[in-house]
Image 1 (cartoon, one colour):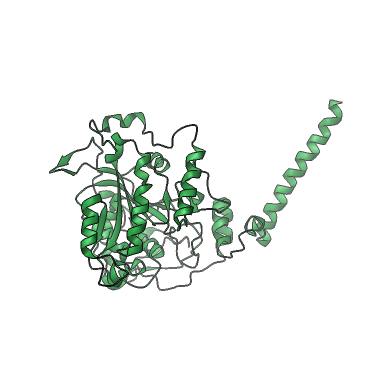
Image 2 (image 1 turned 60 degrees about the horizontal axis):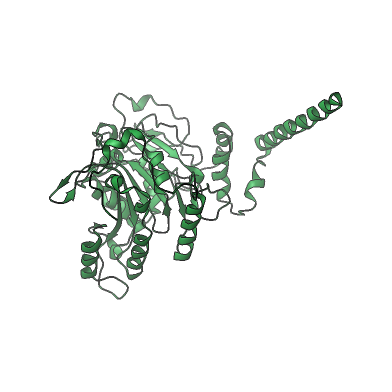
Amino acid sequence: MRSDMFPRRFIMRARWVALAFITLWLYWYYYIYPDWLIKWESIERQRPNLYNALLPAYLAHHYADKTRPERDNYEALPSLLNAPWPGSWPVPKLTAPKYENGTLVSPALLMLHVMSTPSVAGAERRAFLRSVTPLKTVPPEYRHLVEVRFVLGYPPDGDKWVHRKELDAEQAAHGDLFFLHGLAKGGENMNNGKTIAWMETLAAYPRPTQYIIKCDEDTLPLLPNILDWLVTLDPAQPTYFGTTLTRWWGYMHYFEGMMYGFSSNVIKTVGAAEIPKDWATQDWDEDARTGELMFSLPTKPGVDPMSIPNDHSGSFINMARNPPVMEDMNTLRLPRNPDPRSGLHRIDLKWRIADWGRWWVSDPHSALAYHRLKHERDYKEAWEKVQRAWRWRAFVWRPPFRMRSLRDPNPPKH
């Protein structure tokens, strides 16, 4: 009987192997695979992103060779190219909490900054987010390692804006507002320079940190998962991380604005560069503009930029031109990692940061953030799902043993 079963099992396995081979062959020649995974979305812009996410790099690059950016005039920024290299900044060393005149001055592991507005709706959203603050998932004795703030400008006069006195009262009560000066459009000009103004303000911020994350107010950050991942990285390595899923591939490589972050040394370099205001305030998608900025980071010491060949990967800057120009941009080919000129590490977290309800989103044990939770009902639903997924163990960050010396001997009671 066993002799009869063996050929059948062999034949079945051979069929599966043949099917896998034919599927890959169809992709290679006709770009069919994996369209069956994408048809449920029926969104053409997601096709290339999922190719990059699902396929090995050499297959994804074969498809990416077919695409070009919708803009050709990507100029590098000389002021940023000539700034200090990110890796030259000292790395803040984490310690137990230290205070000066009642202000926490010891370095943070993470600054999580939520983009907000000085409007009535923005004030209501901040009140809601505080009620479900992600800091509740950090043990009190380690909360000094994480700073959560809301980023906004100062409001003009008008019915839809919160009065300046109300913002001052809100800051006095919570101390979690991060103000930006000189923003146009009533303190909310996200696609006209707000993100770059935020970076420049952060660069001069008195409290040091190792990592910085920008987060939309309709994004639910899962801090325990984020912190567990961050402590595996090297804070001395210039790093830019986020997700490419749902991005528009007509732009050059960037991470989606729902949530992305940096090692603090990248922010220090951007702040030292004095980005031209006319460039920073152009009307352009802020996340795409941030990704564009990352291509102009300074050259790593010891690297001859003139010796780097153009492999059409989207990371080549012709330094012989004046000003330097990004040439032969291919928006789907992933830039070489680390960048051979600047040394920047780009980390694509793919479905670990994704829109809530998408079929590809990671489960709460591995996801870092859920996006598109504009209504309080949806936000609470997502948060409750996360807690149910962790019902056998509370969803609270458990720092590695080596970080025990960083504990606060007098942690907050709330």
